[in-house]
Length: 245
Image (cartoon, rainbow, N blue to C red):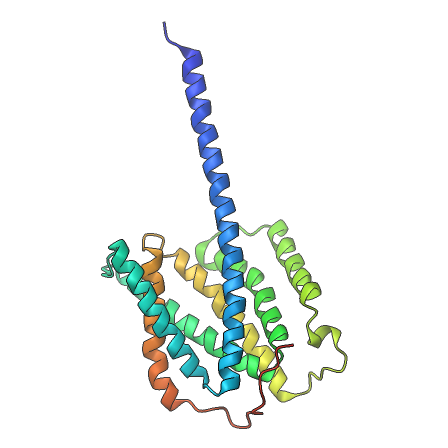
């Protein structure tokens, strides 16, 4: 006689294990997202210090990307991952991701010199949820429901209420200042670049994450090296120290 109860118990056990696994993955993803946010905020502070000391925008990018390239290369070697990419589409996406992140970093560093760091960071972080969801819907064909859009908009208001940026709550802040207007525009563009990068990464699901990180830093380092000597400070740069708040 077949033991139907035993089969049912085994099936329910598999379903339960799968459910717990999905829950654990979701929790891990949230934790990693929070860690990423803390690291990004810390990186912004170091960027401010470097600018105030006198480093140029592309010097900052070059030094940071060289350090990132060496660190990620060490992880790749220790993990014995292959750096060879035979797929032409993946090669294009790796290069595109590097260029996108370079544009985002450069825009963000320029922006924090012309507007308060809190304002520019608020704009970047508030724009990313909406832009990422929209780009995922367009490029990855992911679903984007009315609930998703509502939550994204609510997250923008939440970030604004928490950070209280001066361009919203400080009436003495002048939006007529050309440098601040440029800074806010650059911050929005940086948010767009930072939103596009994870979408491109999602298209490379079969590529190891540390390999993607290595190529991102390597491309940025190679491009920022000549730009250190080619690109000068924009004409009319105010030349003041970065305002943190």
